[in-house]
Image (cartoon, rainbow, N blue to C red; front, side):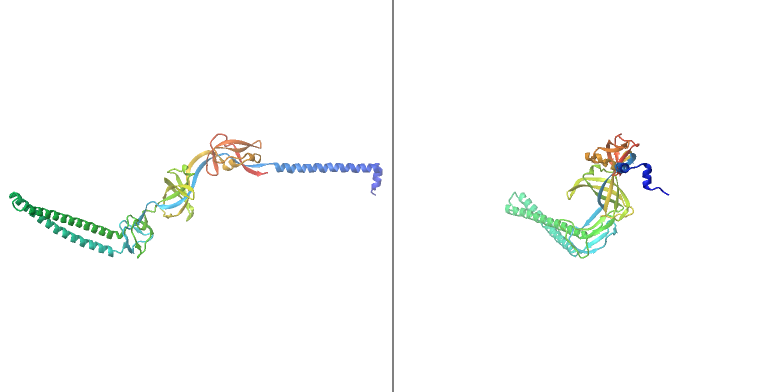
Length: 401
């Protein structure tokens, strides 16, 4: 049989007052135990929350390739505009887009009815003026002989015969005959020049290719009227050879100082987004272009197009390789941007600054290190001094806080 509570208390000698003291003692002990447990868990969780775990990256030797980005368009290396110097109506067009033609090959003809008529009129006029010149020549010869006869007689008779008046009239007739003859010769020369001009216009009515090449653009149709005035109308645009092309890049003024002739260019076009094309810079034009307030400089890139994938006018997105630094000490660009929370109020320098800072861990504490920087490829930056070694790791972020 188990003892009752009263029996236990009687055995222990507990009175009513001592029972109250005992319970109070138990409550005090329990309170301090719970307080200790609470403080322990509070410290555990708050200490764990304040522990910072940093992300780091090694300082390493790598190749830094710097580039300048630019856009532009493809053009033929040698393009020729074929125009016409005479006005008229297009009678026939013998070539089309993409036609391959040889030098001297007929590309188009004008209606030559009026031009041929002008040539025939000029020929007739020339014949007429030549006849007039021949007649004037005969009159001149007669006047010359008459003057010589009269003058000789006048001299032989010592002025007695013929009269002075007859001598003067003979001389005047000679001068008149000379003038008529000179005028006839001038008219003949003018008629000859007009005939040559009309014959030249007739020849120009036939448009021939000035080069061996391919027709890129055709601007005329049969029946169309062309008017040659101050500017020569352009009928066709031709390219001599599309196996060699050029890209005209617009390089921003902020980048043009890095760009040099002979540098390599890698580019792509929308038609072949997965394919990379290559070229070499052959010219940097000094004349600037301003578009929407942005100053750019046209840079010419020579491109091999042996496979004929590239077409004139295609839009190009290019990357110009401006420098290649082999096996240089480098850090990720993220390391130059990173600052521990306690230091963020100080601020950070721009990546373009030559002197910047990175952070490394020493005894589990971030340590700031000043570094001198060089070129960057967009992800890593060249460290030009000896403040870091390949044994170091730089902080690039916070993994856990």
